Length: 136
Image (tube, rainbow, N blue to C red; front, side):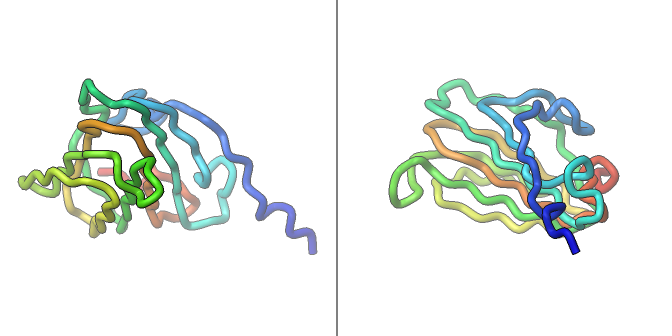
């Protein structure tokens, strides 16, 4: 058996390819989705931002019919250095990194970077790695 198909090509692409999203700050890397892992059941991206000082919302509130997990890490050795605002349902939380947010299926959510530098990882468990198919 040839296992090379499990080595996925990582690409930098705009979030505008997603339902309810626009380009967004920093650089977005797609690690696993329906294009490079159609047999998989996970969508995973990493967004890297530097020196955020103009907070912007780059996607609309939305929910998924599957669970997801957000990981926020600052650029410091102890993972501090990034401040974010997370919206879960009708509640907003301002958090410093490191931060991990579990989002159960059906929960409306959103986030924005407030200040600092670091990275955001989004892991969505969805058939075929298709984020748009799982978005409501």
